[in-house]
Length: 271
Length: 95
Image 1: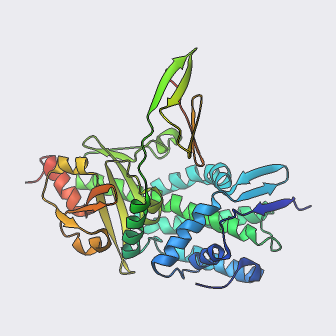
Image 2: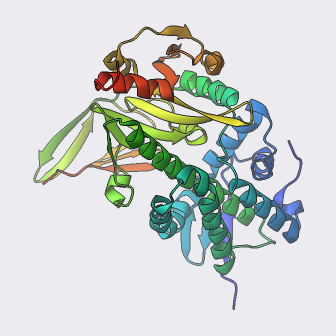
């Protein structure tokens, strides 16, 4: 089979350091804040890299949004919702789909040793697939936990394409919320457009914690004392609600379990 | 940081890199360490500049027309479309 003509143009601001940090990300060698900052920037810049294949031209972002996600998302979400234990079983599921992305990439003839930028495209697709798949797995985990905890909420339907792109993932007491993994939250963090966010973080490299961030008006609904805090020390202060003021932003952060307890209290289900 | 580039990698090396990456994702959540998350969050929140653009929307011959109260370099408005960076927002009147 004749190889299709393929060319990739990287954005001018994308440097060899960005490429190296993409390799570090894949190899689990990202070091410290500098490494993560550069990695977030690298994948951000790659949004606008251009793939010319045959007579068609795509940005890396449109390759992901128009080719990868439509092909895999519904099937992935259907399988995800069938898992008994989404928290434990979803990593294996999303990695199986990641392998399919690699196989499809090869089948399309896009894997070209002589064009090293094709490796960047494949890395980019895997990164965003990871963000998508992990994000929804976390969402399902939270929806099930809220249900089990007795929290009254409305969630969007993940299998309905339009609802999936609704502005918020869930609503609790009329407040619009979003459920995000830490990596994805960094991309959408400012300005905070929802009333509250539920975010999962890795603590001391081994355990996970879930934090709820609320806009001040959303916190007023709960109406409790807060401790004035510092964003860089927040993880040590989460034993009670912490009010953070940074730049022009202000929000309250508290441990997810404590947030649930306070919502149940508002619902009148516990004293 | 590594000095390695994709061009320096043999095909088996790249395959191994991907294979290890996918294998690792099958056993974890790939979250960012909390201390780095909060540092980056603080940076991004401080960097962000809040600028308000007021939009007026009119119905002209059954078409929505959006008019901004001023020019803002990163936002382009064309008829019923708003272009912000790589995002295109298209407004339609709900029926």
